[in-house]
Length: 109
Image (cartoon, rainbow, N blue to C red; front, side, top):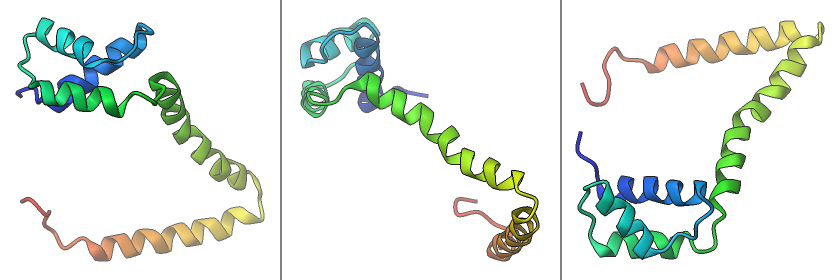
């Protein structure tokens, strides 16, 4: 797998954010150069401009906590004896609908 300039800039930005260093085009270029990945200056300047106002640590923290929070209401509803049978019936209906959508081949097969 070859490294793309976009992916290299993302990883470089994550490295800088982890070290509490400001994300600039020069620093992104230095990291990608140290990794021996040829990235055009356009990509480093575009990423640095896009990330000027973004707090990468807050972004990563909010994205890592989003999945468990979404699962919590389902766990709370399952604890209720009255709501559990109704939910199971609804889940079965959803599964049967998804089975109808599968035609035995994928989009890229």
